[in-house]
Length: 155
Image 1: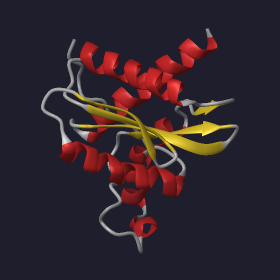
Image 2: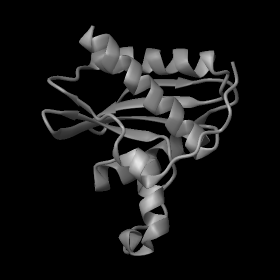
Image 3: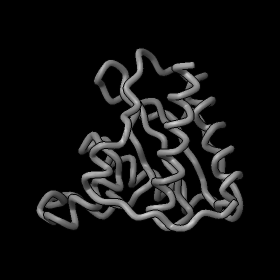
């Protein structure tokens, strides 16, 4: 089922659920990645997905025509999340509102949607990121995977 391209506001992004968990293991990362792949397939999207714990890749899937260029973009989105502690799409919106937030950052920082932080007890420990579609679509798929993962963990 192909979905229309979403639109967001800063306020919506600031109020999205945050993945703040009591723990997040490699098995959790794989499960989150599997859920993301299910969302990508269900929505008929062409996306790569990476789940990192710290700096280590814990899960990767490259669907459709995605590949290394998408993995490179994901790395840049992760830099934004690690620097600011919130989604890379919120980073894009905030940078558009105030370009000075990116002063001193090189072009390896990708202020494009698709990467979401994962916290354990308030500490940033990992990320899930997608790349391959317009950045609002990347973000939508990532956020939906996180929502489904959180629902599964709380069930």
